[in-house]
Length: 257
View (tube, rainbow, N blue to C red):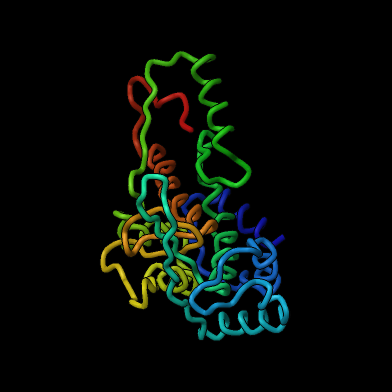
């Protein structure tokens, strides 16, 4: 498969930047992305549901692919709704238009093929085929079977409230130089949210790509596919830093989950 070839090249050349990968967003890739969407998910600002879109699926996906290849694809603002939380507050949920979901999921699959190759084996967060349970199992094995002096717990608090678009794109560009893919990502992170009839756009923080969101920030939200993709870029950076540092006297930690 094409993505397997991309993954193999990324594995062989850790510093390689991919300059021509947008053509992998094929009609077949869009079809697979649609198949993997939740069919009962709420509609975005355009009101289009999966059931409605599926009625003319071949035609719709062909038109979507044509928009991507011709450069006429436009990301639509997210639809913001609120649901009740247990503590009485409201949780914002930002919902993308269906075609944006399709293209985003196909793009995440492409980017995963590249960035997955750089992760350390002890990394588990939001990686395909790995879960929090796997991470806990590994932590247990490390603590029980290896000499362990300390356990360090870190949490990325309010991730989408504080991350800066420019910094995130700089990390993506360490592996991706394809102008079409970078243009797609910039469209999504700058698209803004429709909240009670008003268009809200964050000036400094990372804007949304969403299906479900927990952030309280007006300009921050995400969807199931791109939430993982964006957070993985940050985790990817954590995994590449140790390779650039000289070895210390005591050596690196025995593992990280």
